Image 1 (spheres, rainbow, N blue to C red):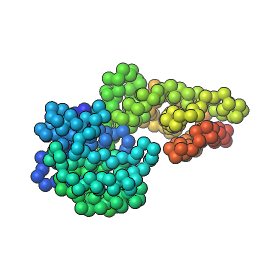
Image 2 (cartoon, one colour; image 1 turned 135 degrees about the vertical axis):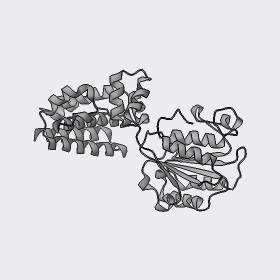
Image 3 (cartoon, rainbow, N blue to C red; image 1 turned 180 degrees about the horizontal axis):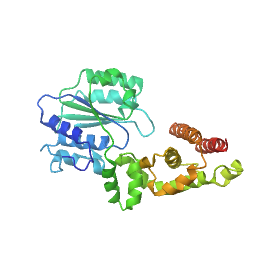
Length: 329
């Protein structure tokens, strides 16, 4: 069941037993890094749970009303709680609306299903309000929380859910998925390694033109140390408007310098950029391990700043200047 979702067989087995059980927990937590399939499995599980034939294969009215692939979530027994488009957080007003809905019995199916997508993004007030729902769960409800930062959830919430942890899938399986997307074997291998077993991340990287961005990052590394840093930055085409592209550039720079550090300490078996090993080996010869570690710290700081909506141009320029100074030490 749910064969379209790669890996996580242990979690799938648990959910199949959940469907068959007479007595079952009312709240589940799907936790793990982004891109591992938590949301996809939660959606398919919800669809199966509400299916009138209990198989979720689109042959009943319930399945027609809950078709995530088409963006149709008009099922009367399905509720979605997630940050609104203009916000990063789930607000207390949204939770109160879910609690209001808890007064109504299922209409079409035997259960009501509520997916909380981004449970770790609830405000403090929203989390405390949501706790009341978990403490006194409505009859027939199944609540599925999805979270990346498990430690951001209230301990009292964690104590009232059954946790299903999602781990990276085997890189070889990710590679096979990518090869079906018309990527070369070498490209599929690199993206599978860079994504560290996350199919969602690997597909996102392929759609965001990772290799073009990596080429740009490699050009920067090759230019270091910069004889006239500010003049170089004036001509170097750093992303300056699109946060996604800026983060992708930082990511590409990070994985290249990471591989250079591994080559420096003779750990080539763990390289991400296997197609550039010879070139990276030559570049690494001009760096000291402490310089590479320092550069990776600066990159990590820049990535965090971008996730907090810091100015793109200033953040990237500051990062490049700091790395250049480390390279000149």
